[in-house]
Amino acid sequence: MLQERNLTMLMDFYELTMANGYLESGHGRDIVYFDLFFRRPPDGGGYAILAGLEQAIDYLKNLHFSEEDLAYLRSKGIFSEAFLDYLRDFQFTCDVWAIPEGTPVFGHEPLMTVRGEAIQAQLIETMLLLSLNHQSLIATKAARIVRAADGRAVMEFGSRRAQGYDGAIYGARAAYIGGCAGTACAIADREFGVPALGTMAHSWVQLFPNEIDAFRAYAKLYPDSCTLLVDTYNVLKSGVPNAITVFRELAEQGYRPKGIRIDSGDIAYLSKKARKMLDDAGFPDCGIVASNSLDEYIIRDLAVQGAQLTSYGVGERLITSRAEPVFGGVYKLVAIEQEGEILPKIKLSENVEKVTNPGYKTVWRLFDRESGMAIADVLTLADEVIDDTKPYTIFDQSYTYKRKTLTNFIAKKLQVPVFEQGRCVYQSPTPTEIRDYCAQELGKIWDEVKRFENPHTYYVDLSEPLWNLKHDLLNRHFGG
Image (cartoon, rainbow, N blue to C red; front, side):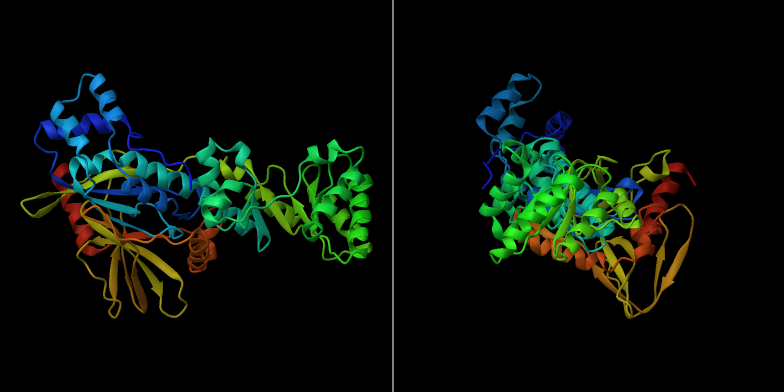
């Protein structure tokens, strides 16, 4: 397994100052509710893919403050001894609910809800956001790229361009969840079972006296999986002709070549020429892999140009989500308990998008009963039950009284219990199981929502009780 690290102190310093303040002001053991959510998908898209829950769970399971942690905090000179004693005996006891990994998710719905003592719920903010923000970003980018590939395999090739080694390892996991066929990152295969894929670099070809000797040496070592990199010198004048020569030698030994890879130049033009050369030589089953700074837009353009490609290796623009490298997840207080009563809290802002949905909530997905396709998501108070045998009215999140009544639908609650009083009650699926689930659930989202540009809006609405609660709070604060 990956070397175990104590990441308890991976937190924003204000979480510690607030936690100390909660204890000193007598609010440390108050019961609070936090929602983790994002406001809009990256890249101007219509959806996101949730990933990173397993790593968040691992973090919560292993929360503890070492004597070295406590010594560091004492050295700051601002934390009370009572607070340090609290941390020394720290035991996670919160309840946590979350949407499973691989689920397509949308803005303003709680991906995770935490209930517990104010100190505990506050201290875990950064790591929960870090775990879900990073992997959800990469899984979402991967899903977009895989969609552009239109059934052709996409391989994640970005380790060397990732933002640090954790970015490479967990990015490979997230890319696989989003639909990639595998990764160049060997440790991701060892740790998570993400298939490790790869053949050779240009240095292999350069190391030998000439290109054909390099190809022959590789083919001798890996005759059953021979894919040759043909652009070290000249794709059409030497690379493909030399590959064909070696492929014929393999065929005489009873092997079939897997393919060639083109990593530079005009890939659309070169792939069409290479395809004809391979077909004429008797290798119509030989694949052509493209790499070199690809993303969903370039892949889509290559298809429009008639590129003859069977798979793609995608690196930096996937592993860093270069077009928009931030997933804007936030963690907001939505309720507190006083004498057994849940009191909703709301955050207001002049920016309407930043006004939160108050209260202890959950999220439902409504599916058309006939087509099985998703219609909308609905936020409800936690104790509400949506009866899908009756017409159901949902309300827009805005200040208006816009509403819609649905019939002939099936309602599914998305959040599941993850921790109960600090005890993990959730068994994380394998990355392959999550990947399969992700593909299945994406198939229930209309193509119009999955467009790259100007996607159709998928609505996340409110139940009537939650809409009324939100507007009562708004009126109370604004005097309306």
